[in-house]
Image: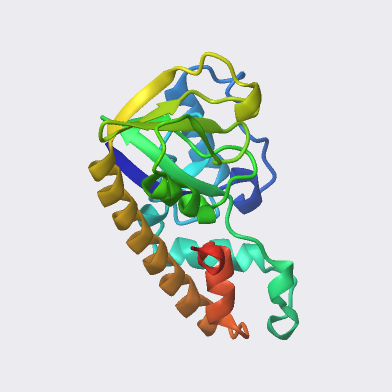
Length: 221
């Protein structure tokens, strides 16, 4: 089991030329879809790919500084450095992906962001053995701790109080989860430091605070 910090790289946003966003319905073959995805992000010095061929989620450790600079430059395009305010910003879309043997078993969903690692950390603090909600965006999932193991459900659109017959989709070792979360948190801090240096070069004021916001570390608990 491995946890990966991921952010969503929306291909059309970084495309050099106008192009249509590849749709998984148009390209049911994941390899063909992946190639179409590569084409659409041609403005980036493309040397990374999504962790799952049917998503736009990218491992933050795979994004080098050149690409990160392009991403930040695009995100702040048209905004003068002196006019960039903290309340204009939110964390990168994404979150924690749980991988098993190279397969994505749990992916962050709509409205999830890279700061959601704090939600995963609450699993370790939980002393109950009942199903509880794990916010990863919507749909979300549920978790339950049993005898040193953490069971995770499939995605759900219903609240915990309305959920019936919750079933475990995957089970992981709690100590292994703790170790992986510690690694992911270090990666998140490193990502924040990289962003901070790039923003400083861009002459963005409050670059250190802004990098915390973009990586969700401003709301870490």
